[in-house]
Each structure stands twice: as C-alpha cells, then as structure tokens.
Amino acid sequence: MALKFAKKAAMPLNTEAAEKPSADSSKKTLSTVSFLKKGKAAKELLAYEEAQAELRRQEAGRMWRFWMPDGEDRQITFLDGALDDDGMLDIYMFYEHSLRLNGKVENFVCTAAVDETQPCPICESGDRASFVGVMTVIDHSEQKIKSGPNAGKVISNTRKLFVAKQSTIKQLTKIAAKRGGLTGCTFDVSRTGHQSPSVGNQFDFVQKFDSYEEIAEACGLKVEDVQPANYEEEIRYLSPEQLIELGVGKALVGPGLLKGSNLKEEL
Image (cartoon, rainbow, N blue to C red; front, side, top):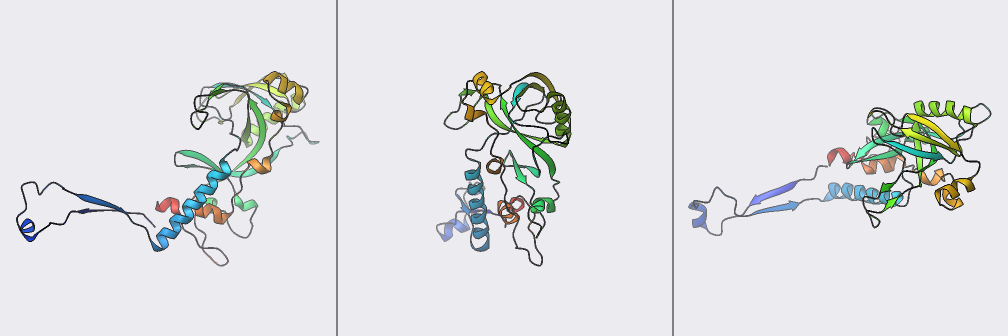
C-alpha cells in the first residue's frame, strides 16, 4: 500500500482571525507533515524492512563480483576452471536475475529450477533470467574503497566472483581448451563497449601458474587466500516468499500459493 505524506495548514486561533484573513493569508504560516502507517500497510512495511535488513546481513562479508567499466583494462588470474572429460568448463552454472534496486544492481537466483511448486516471482514480473557460470579470480588491479571503515584505502590482488553469461563462457571454454583449463591462467582483460559483457570481452593470455603456492607468492597473499570460493555460501538463494517480501517480484496468488504484495511497486 502506498505511503502518504499529509500536509495541513494551521487552524486559526480565534473566530475573528478566521473571518478577517490578514494580508499574508496567501502564505502558509505553518504546515505539519505526518508519516502515516497502520494496519495492513504497517505490517507490510515492517515485513519489507525486515527482509531488507536480512538481505544486508547476508551481503555483509560476501565477496565482490568482478566487473569492468566500459573502456577499462584489467588483469586477472583464474583460481578454478578445469575442463571435464567432454572438454567443457567444469564449473557451477545457474539461472540468475539482475535487478537495479535503490540505485544498486542486485542479483537473485531464479527460484524456478529450485522450487517447482510455484513460479518464480521475478519471472512472473516479466524479467527473464540469465543462464550464468561462476568462477573465482584474483583481480590484480588497484582499487580505492569508496565507503565503510576502510574508505580511501587502495587495495589490489582481490579475490572476486567471476559470473559470466553463456557467450563469455563459450569464449572462455575455447581459450581453456588451448591452455589445459583456466586454473592458474592470467589474462589481460578489456571491455570494449558499454553493451559488451561487464566482465570483459577480450582476453589476452599472459602466463599460467603451476600451483596455488606460486599464485600466492606472486600476489603477496597466503595460500588460503587464493582458493576458489565456497559457492554455496557466496551465491545467495532466496525463496519465492522472501523475494515477495523484498518487493522484487510479482505476488503469487492462486490455489496453494501464498498471498503477498509487491512493495517495490507500491513504495
């Protein structure tokens, strides 16, 4: 339910003032603003805020995703990406929605392949999920932290999630076939257009490390800091009910389905 702000002019203090408006009566002398919420609207807003707080808690401490602005060049080293017996990259793949919420891109696993008892709320809202693969890389570029307790600090050799769509996975599979897999491979990566993949579209081979120990030594890191991510912890899955509470999908109504409200649209 939409939230409203109520503005109300000050009432006159006596009858005479009411009958004889002053020369300044066209100007507002006092206005009050009330933030109104109660009943169903209050309960829905509370559920939305609790869901947002839980989302922030889940995001705290998670690895950043690797991405590049248009026209930028970076260097990365893959920490996984072996080939299977069929010559395909042996990596985790899944369907994912990417939505812009509060000015920030948020990613959500599509629930359709997980919960077959009901549709995915984000799919129902009209957004089409992308089929993606995930690996782990070391981003060797220097970056300045923009916010938080370490704001202003420059860091490099950061472990990140490399989440790429089908076209990029196919491209990297061909490269991996020539290099015996991607694990330990360092590439100079470029993104040559705003419509090209956010992880880059040009990969120029630099070198290949033989072990995690070599990678750690070259980056000045510990061996445990150059291991592939624990994807079950890093890739967030929210149930259809949780997605509806967050307001990022269409409420599902029908036999056997829970009722909800799309707070994103109403807010």
